Image (cartoon, each protein chain N blue to C red):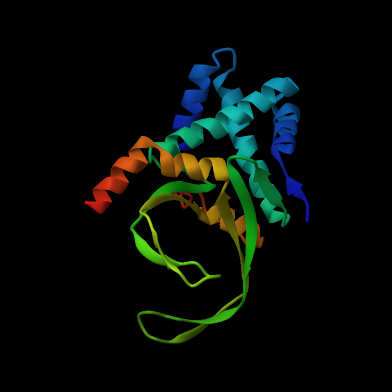
Length: 105
Length: 105
């Protein structure tokens, strides 16, 4: 599913809203999560998951091609941890069981 | 640290889009639910400029209860992973956002 498919599904389910409104709603949600993370805040959506920012210390990396040591600056990385409900849905669905059985076989 | 919740996101939709508070909250819930049900079927959810949520199949491995040291099999399972887009990473680090077209993750 892409963002445009998500927008199309929402539009179909909400015929009283204009396409522009639905686009704006979806953009607002992801922009607001991005803004919160860039302020260093966390976003917690119970049942879905939590977005946080993790700090990575500066380290000495290596150019894998030349083997040359290169300094990597300290940085922040966005992180998502699925909530309990979503984690269980992803793992316990019929599709999950079927593919788990295939992996066992 | 401040935490952004459903209520904050719904309030932002209310002020930005001009829907009622109730409808704003309902639409936010619908967005999360549509994303969850796609992930439940094993489908990836790609939000350009934000990131990709995908489901990864993990094989069986031997784990250990860290308290007792007893070996326990960890069954094959499916886990959700989130890969942030370059755009989101840049925002979190307050660096220049990559040029348009580079946000295909």
